[in-house]
Image (cartoon, rainbow, N blue to C red; front, side, top):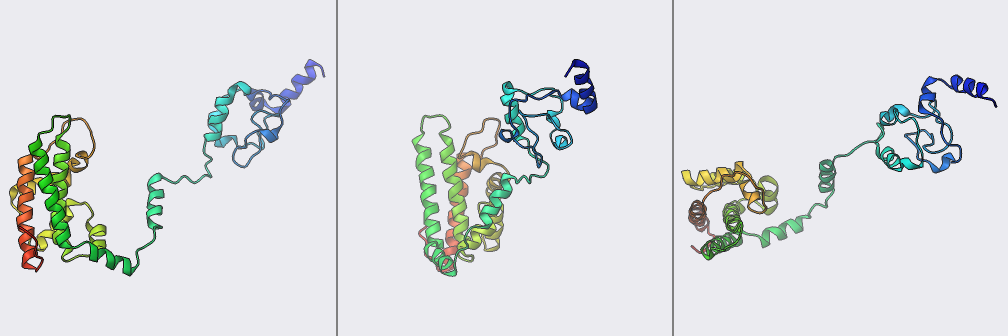
Length: 256
């Protein structure tokens, strides 16, 4: 075929296809990726705009010619999601996974309640408070040595509150309704008779309204507002006395 006939054939295929260029003829379409529901080859045959859903992949419109040297572009093309592809966020996947978890039987819930009671929670809270005091006195010479001290105090306060709530609520109810939410724990504890003062409420506000609790477990640089060791120690002692008195009045003989 002479040059004139070749030029005529190219013109007949249209300007748009000519912009994309001719495709190598030495590869077969079976070894090339598919785009959406079409079967247009990436490395083989002519590029057929009639069958290729090129509008799904506007990133490929401006490449006049693809060859074996464009392997990176091929990988990029493979990773472009089709509009028909349903994308599920990681948060939704996690929620679906948690929703599919096996629910505990009544016997298992009863066993949880028998093994986690108010006295046990109160005693563990005491252990955390005393450990925080001991670690504070040790005066560890290391970077961020105050983080574990604060965390021990925070957890002691949470366990004192849950020891009071456990006298009324089941373990499952505490886990689902209150969790680690300081504001909810304090609000429910007040309904059960917990007495707090202004300094306690300031510590509760920092624990509930900021990331001070989670940041005591990890590291995040920048300006922060921390409760002092003295404030945490005093609030722990206040929770111990108030919760302990309420539990003893309810027949739970915790040691004060």
